[in-house]
Length: 101
Image (cartoon, rainbow, N blue to C red; front, side):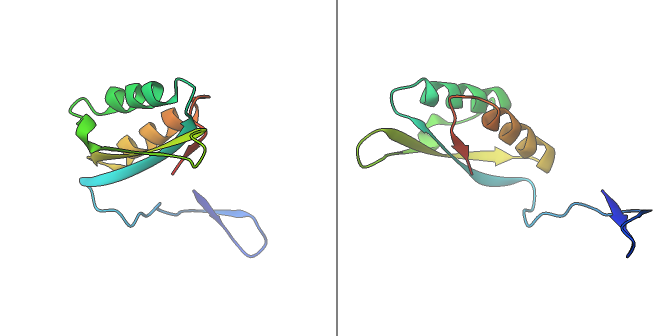
């Protein structure tokens, strides 16, 4: 990122992106989709493509009151910020996945 001076012009100084996470770490990814869609399998396929040693026992499922929606909370072991960003990018860009937290 480039910082800007009081006039709104770029001054060339770079700002480092910071995170509260310390890597590597376990991280819970939460996502939601429609129960009657391919949401669950699609989400798991994306996660497995990023984390080969992913353990399906680490999945927590919760259905909405009327069973129209399913939320998944998945714990993954993340090595670095780039790995986490790539996962979020792939999950967020898929039409079956309505929301990613």
